[in-house]
Length: 330
Image (cartoon, rainbow, N blue to C red):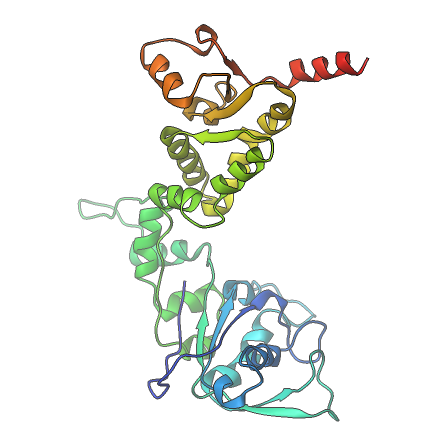
């Protein structure tokens, strides 16, 4: 969920800094002051004040600084509502005194004066649970022929439709103070990753997961082959869990864990083959040895043969090779 403040007078985009709202606290308490965001932008700009004053600040995890619940508490909400109040003056565009040295502010220290009028502020976060608030506003309980049917809020498409309909009142109900929301006139929602997007994340980037595992297997002169159906199954599992791209590593690691330990102990193996059945946990990945390559193995599978029927193909089994190594050591 993004809601940027855009100043039309700013003509050029320069330095960009990403800050974490969970580290911020109200002035005078343990943690980072909000002015530290501008100091990071100043350093990112090469200590050039003019360039700094035309930069971009992205504040991540903004939903984590929402107000605490309605319970009465003696202590102040210094990391929630207090941070929102502290950000007001910076976001609306003022001349801010920023300490020249990182850390806590020293009244006797030197300060930099940074004008935030032409700095683009973007706040983002997951805002989990906001769809429920929007649902209560848009689809009130009713009965009769014209009643609204109950919608599945766990569905990513339904959540995306609700986020598109978010208004400042919903964010205020969520826990953001009206003064803070009022300084961000544009509210933008992003859609969740689809299964095809997750497949692209697995394979396309320069440091993608599949390329990392291929490099690890290559250290033992073994190539890793992940079939298209396996990639689809991995993305499907991550999508169903709702963990997004962060869940891809845990799924892939679980599938390849035993294989990575077994491969160095198996002679004549040249390829580790992973398909959809291995991802689902129905059986382990397959090791191809000697003259059996990936194309021949897939042709034999199409003819109805199983792994046990194919020569030079065997399933990964950690216990058998552990016992083999123990006998060799003896």
